[in-house]
Image 1: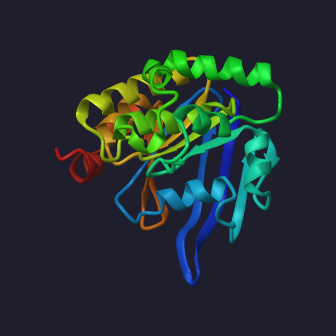
Image 2: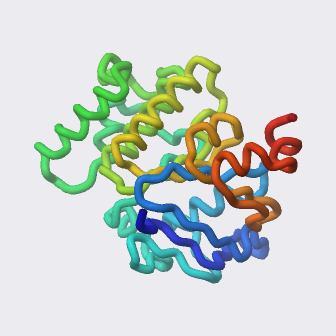
Length: 236
């Protein structure tokens, strides 16, 4: 598989704080890759740096063979990367359908309608709730809407930040089953997730981020068998 996303020595932070330092990783076309670590390890910072929401202080970010660090967020989305942020960040006073359509790129109405239909097929609950205000949805439904909004951009790479956060177990199960279907259909995933067992079950490979640096990397099987991962993240 060809490399779709590559980080090479990425440095990023906030003010005087360097949150990630020297982060190097790659995501290949068609993979699902997990980025795991404790709170404050720099996982969200890494995603924000990839999508241009936070400037890179050093290193390189390459997507599909072209350098994208230094580009604006809109340019990065246009290249084929969509970001589902932590906490969903929907527009609560807009309808579900309006929130979804805000995620689409370009003015081709037919293409947008086709993509919307595919999202409704993936999440039938959103079809039922499409005229409902997003702020009145349950947590699981809001996460469906946030993922659907990301998919409306028809991304080659979908970044997901804590998709199971605050959700009931039944909703978590549904979300991860759907993400597997999205990946099986050809969309590449980079997943930040505190629910490490779920993240590794979904992913082909993973990276462990600790104190802003990559501490471990390997296949799903490698990480599930690693004593440090078992003790620190799986409670074994």
